Amino acid sequence: MIVGKLEGARRAVRLQSELVRYMETYTTKLNNNDITEFDEQGYLFIPALLTPEETEVLQRDIPDMLNRQGPEVIREPGPNSAIRLVYGGHVHYESFRRLSLHPRLLNPVRQLVRDEVYIHQSRMNPKPGFGAGGAWTWHQDYGTWHRVDGMQQPKAVMTAVFLNDCTAVNAPLMVVPGSQHHGLIDDVAEDEQAEGYALFDIDRQTLQALADAHGIEALMGPAGSVCFLHCNIVHGSSNNVSPWDRTIMYMNYNAVSNACTGTDRVWYHNNRDFTPLVALEDGCLIG
Ligand SMILES: O=C(O)CCC(=O)C(=O)O
Image (cartoon, rainbow, N blue to C red):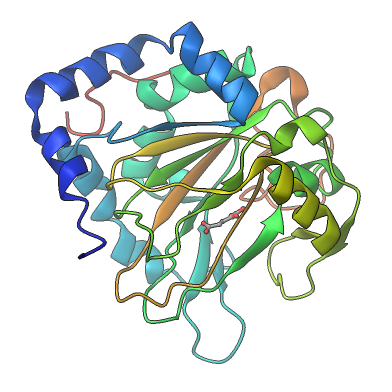
């Protein structure tokens, strides 16, 4: 079996009627079943929420992002290593600014958070192939945002926008469904490898218990898929030994009523502009 092509999913994407259905549904709002699924599972995965044309507009800016030289670019440990993260794309690139205001992201996020939202941070994780893109140990993003940025409540949603196909073999993002119900986990250690960003690794016993109780799901789908993730969901990923890159853009939104009180980190980690975001038109990426 050739894994990594996702032909079935792609065929579905090509079906115009299917596409129109997605766009009409998600431009306006999530239905009650979607919201219940998110509240129970801690994530809501929508395959091909962006069309191939829209996704291509975003993909075009990846090479330039990978050539940036600023402190917002974080490398894997070691000399001449690959890029692990690029923060702040929604400020530096018009395409990602539009993505951050896209109604197919913003409207669902507002519904899931039950509030107006602002961008807490955005980051691209390119996870290149041939082993260059490193693993992510199991963690909760709220762990960092609460401990470091002073976010008071877990009223934030991460959106994972797939810029490449994510398959079983190119190190997909993995989640422990329902783990957000356990709240902020205290059994953590600050990751000393995490230079240029902060990460709190969940200890093995806790992860074992959570995984035994809830299982682990890999998030897979074609480029353009989007997953909305509760900020307390436990997640991680392995390194990418396949030949295919696995780039995900994370747009992370916080409720305006839950604005962070910390001021230690720079804007691209902890954005201090809490102005409620206003969605653009649905065609904003290609218009
Ligand atoms: O993209 C991945 O594989 C994991 C990234 C992640 O966990 C994070 O940025 O918090």
